[in-house]
Length: 411
Image (cartoon, rainbow, N blue to C red; front, side, top):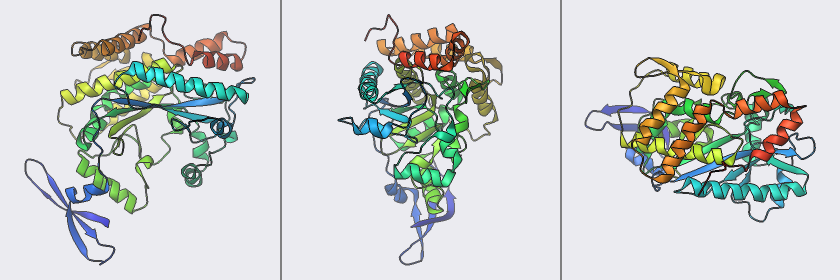
């Protein structure tokens, strides 16, 4: 059945929508409620606040550290690849964690997966590293993977597909239903600049300093249905939106929705997609923990989502991409300007008052220390470039950082 239009709104404690469909068999109009069409996109109930993470790693030559198109060779030589997969180009490898209630265990698993990939990759003269962009990789040289979805993207988006050879971290947080998922897609928006600045690791592009702490967005936001969620405020409305977009041929699946935070009904999660791939897996695990704590807080202190423009939120995200931890931030409630670092530290302090588990306390303490140092991964990369003989030396140092963790880290 095809969505034609919204027929009416009915007022009440909970607005109920009725929709008119055109039955493809009879050709006659048919009225269905939102509940009736939800069966076409059920939201899987999952354990609240469990986490998972996808890490997109650069596959580089061991000698000259350039991106190499060896993902097919590396993956074919691995015994188990359910959690180690192809990505958009053949110079990318994706690690997928399982579901975790502990970010320490998440870190252990992802580190083991990276070790397994590294061991096989080295047999073929290559290795993996973190970072949101290769320092001097040429987008024109990238080879799209053979997966049919990626080939379809290449046909649709042309050169944009190759320019999207950037490397991110996607964070999954378990929620109980679609309404919670849609709520978090909105409620997390003011905190997205936190994650941008904390994960930023893409300061260079094509061998040139971009003047941005995170330049990865230029390879992502050119896709349709990107950036912030639409004016959708519950799961019923999302199902209608989804069906309309499928029906007119704009999307084919959830994967064609590239919002910074999107629902993943099959997994029972929200997926935060705005982070660069950090230089270390440990930092990626800490960002996952921080995101989970934010989600817990926001659902425990739920407020009404007010329909409004997003100019201030977009400004804050831009500033975080431009200046990282040194960015300015406009509070959307008070309209007062402050430093982004100060805003993150205020948030961490507020969350700490409501946090009881030792693991969550560790995560918040880690984030606070990271912010107080005032240096993110992009700053580290720039510092290494200033001291290095060439970019190959910097890429080699980045490669060695992937599995490092704080000396005082205790599981």
